[in-house]
Every structure is written in structure tokens, then in C-alpha cells.
Length: 286
Image 1 (cartoon, helix red, strand yellow):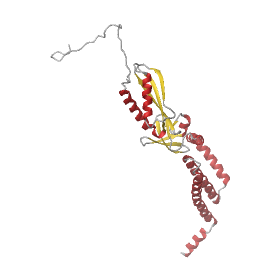
Image 2 (image 1 turned 180 degrees about the vertical axis):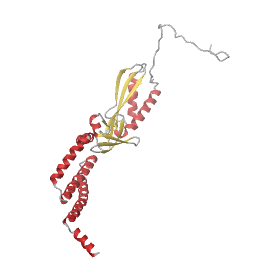
Image 3 (image 1 turned 45 degrees about the vertical axis):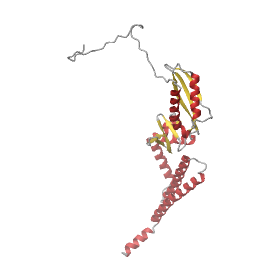
């Protein structure tokens, strides 16, 4: 037993084992130092950077410092740094060819971060998809839709497509498309709409509401009525003001028409022939 203990003691004291122990301690220390420094960087820049840039700074600094400690640990084990760099370059090229889509998303993510078209917490719309930005990574953007479902948008899609940032500015314009019958007084309609906007506390006084007569439709006079609202009150005003316009039109007996079609068969003045089927007592049609 004493001989076995002596053998183990001698083996532990060999340079190779000591190098392994030092390498493990270096890596463990790297985890601690990387977490500490990344946290300090976030605290120092919290007032000058937005949330998604803070997240990228935290992750980037953490993995960069950890990579340095991992390299130091490998060098402690006797690995040649030049060989490591050469191997890393070959692996990087191979991965780039094998994952071109990921590389495209990575490059697109860098452009998104530099351009900063939206931030975490903003509402964006891409096609029919509307949601709150939860996270902006180098490969994708994560959204939470209004029905509390999760959506992942690849960065390449955002770079190549047209999208809207709905909460970029403090106020938004609500455009209402309204139609009234040809018989209505357009000036009266304008006065009613402006009065409705003035009576709603969510509608901003500046900029002023806009009444735009768009033209003569197939069966109605087409109007665009635009009001400005704080972005957080947009949906509330959209619901309230449309109901208020309907009530005001009903009180003033303003007609909101529906599309109508006139069907003509044969000669213009000839009546349309109509046949009515009747049934005899036996149940057969006459």
C-alpha cells in the first residue's frame, strides 16, 4: 500500500500532471474573470448604451476573455500557438462553406447592430408579422406577437426586406378611410370629423387632424381623416374614434353607403323575365 501511495505521489509531482492542473486552474479562472469583467463593462456603460448593445457587449467580452484563457490553458499543455491558429483558420473556412446561411445571418446581424433601426422593446412589422422585440442576436431577432406567441426572424430576412418600426417615434398618425354618400355635404362631413377629433382627449391638438378629400369612388365620396396620437394610445384611439364617428354620423343622418351594382340584360327598356315554379298536389313542379 505504501508503495502504491508513493507511486501516485511521484506521478502527481511530474511536470505533465502539474501542467494539466495548471491548465485546469487557468480555464476555471478564465470563467470567473470573464464573468467579472463583462459585468463591470455592462455597469460602466449602462447609461450610454441601449439594452441590446449592452447584451452584445456582455456576451462579446465574456467569450473573448474566455477564449484567451482557453488558449493560455492549451499553451500550458504544450500546444503550439501557430498550429492552433492554423487549425482554427482551416476549421473556420470549412464551417463558412458548410454554413453559408448562418454566415449571411451573422454579417446581416452586424449591419443591423451598426444601423440600429430598432431596439429591444420596440414594435416592428414585417409583412403580416407584428411583435415586440425581445432579443437581437447576431443570427436572428426574436419577437413576441400580440397573441403571446414567439417568432424568430433571421437577420438576413430583415436586411433584404422592408419592415416598419412602429415605436421609433413618440407619436403616430392614425389614418382612417371613410366613405359617405354622394348626396352628403362634404363641408358638413369635415366639420363633424374635426369635432369628433377635438372631443377625444387622446387625439393630439398638434399636429392638427387632417381632412383629405381623396376623390369620387364607385359608389361614394372617399375621404381620409388623419389624427395624431401618442404611440402608447394608438390602438385605444383607433377603436374609440371610429365608434364616435359612427355615432356622430348617425346623429347627423350622414349616410355611409355600400357598393351597389345595376344588372341589365337584353334591351335596356325590356323588363327582366321572371318565371315562378309552382307545384301541383302530387308534388311535381308545373
